[in-house]
Image 1 (tube, helix red, strand yellow):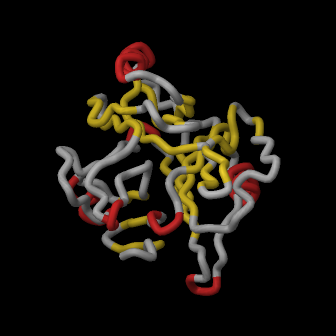
Image 2 (cartoon, helix red, strand yellow):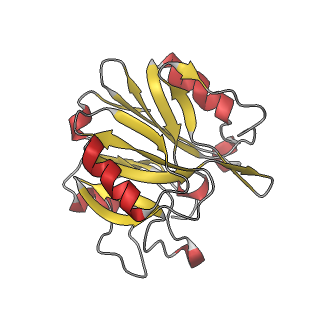
Length: 214
């Protein structure tokens, strides 16, 4: 768990302008002049190239990627100009609607992840909304590596990354596990981000949690 007391310090780092291949988290952190980072939203994972995001991506007020249509259960997870964590369902939105939303709501940084509960793709996003925990109804019951973002009432940002899939003996975390941890640390809002082999945390020039693909 990483706790950032000043939410204005939390930004989306990316590999924009997009190319065929992405970059590892340590390179993104260093190029941004940051001290730490975790993985974020959906991205093009074909052959693990990671060259561009899916859904939407906003960095320091600039919309770098905008294609929210065609994704079942798509959510935007990000911060507005008041440094409030926003978790907004954008399924079915047009590019124009998202652009207007960013302008009207002052969204400064954001990524996208998917709440899609088919047997083949069990993704989930909202965990805690305005202090109320999500009714799971069996969703997110599988244990996996996970990455979660949350925010306390005092504005502090919670960044959680878990191991999983048997690495170092850890099977991973379920949605219920993540909710319990976020509640323990006082989150009033929290969302699941891209997990699995993408989950990693970098701090002070070293990986505290390493993706299984690195």
